[in-house]
Each structure stands twice: as structure tokens, then as C-alpha cells.
Image (cartoon, one colour):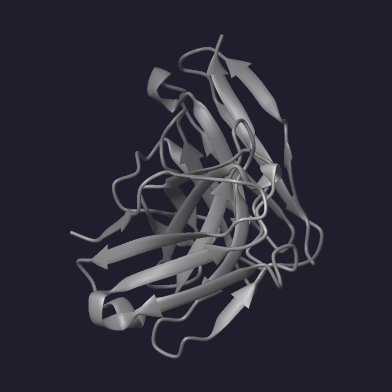
Length: 119
Length: 107
């Protein structure tokens, strides 16, 4: 079945970087974009950006421009999201998500990765 | 960028009640609106896309309607397992902004 399995929880100090992985299985990885969404504790969902695995093209929310990079390794069907210059406000659960067949709604969600930024 | 709003921010209703949540886009998005359900500690789940198309496996008591800028999610008969936060999302073009969410619980 279609699955997105993410890497484990991370604890980082302010100013550091984090790289979260999202392993796709059960479908043709290069045929669907990968989106990243985050959620701080008790808060709503925040869309961060998308990456096309086939071309490597990306589109980022203005809020994260210059601080986020989304990449992929097609050979191991894995997408990555790297966030730099971490601050306490970046403490959140980060999700990868795959769009649906008919549009950019989020059809399949990853397992989630908790990133804690603390000194 | 297009902003998404939802109302109410929370509601409490009895089992069997009809529940309606509203989502509004600051500019036209035609039908490119999805609804998600998120239970505490769980991953969001797609309920409806293209404003009114029910995702496979979602109970028929959920329905969506609307076009252009104004949309609604309706639960025809609220069940205990529907306790969750519901989010709308626009996806006509990036950024794929979510609404702030509506928390639904049982009275």
C-alpha cells in the first residue's frame, strides 16, 4: 500500500539545521510531488512547500524562503526537507504529504517527525 | 497570497446533530478546496476534495459544498468518533494554505 515513512524525532540547538527524510513506497515516486507541512503543539497546519521528484523543482512558502531546502534521492525513493537557522518557534511536528491523482490536495500523509529546538 | 478563514473556531454539539463548518477564501479558488479531519495525536486525514468529492472510505454523513470563495463541510449526524479538528485547504495554486481549523466536540 502507499506509505510515507519519516525519520525519527530530532532535538536541535538554536541556530542548528535539521534534515528530515520521507521514504515513499507503494507508488511511482517520481510521478507525484512531495509537500511538507508542519504543526506546532496545539496549533494548526502550516504548508511549507513542494518538491517535484522528477525534475527537482521546488516551491517554498515565502515564510521559509532562504531557510528551507527540499531535495530527493530517486534511487531510494526518499524526499528530504532541511531547515536551517533553527529557532524555538520551529519546534513542531513535520509531515510530508503526497498530492492526489486529480489535484494538489494532500491524499497521503507521512508518519510525522517531531523536531524540538531547545538549548 | 490568498487567506483562508474558518468559522466557527470551535463548536459543541450532541450526537445525531447536523454540524456545519464554513470556510472562506479571500479570493476565488473555484472548486480547489479540500477538507481534512485530524484527531488528537494523529495524522490529518483527507475527507473531501474538489469542494464536494468524498474521498474513498469516508462515511457518507460527511459532505462538502461551495464554489468560488465560500465553502461548507457538513456532518449530517454527528457521531462520537467525529470528535476532531477540521481544516480546509486551498490548492488551486501555491501556496496551498490551510484554514485555522474548527474544533468539534460532543456536548
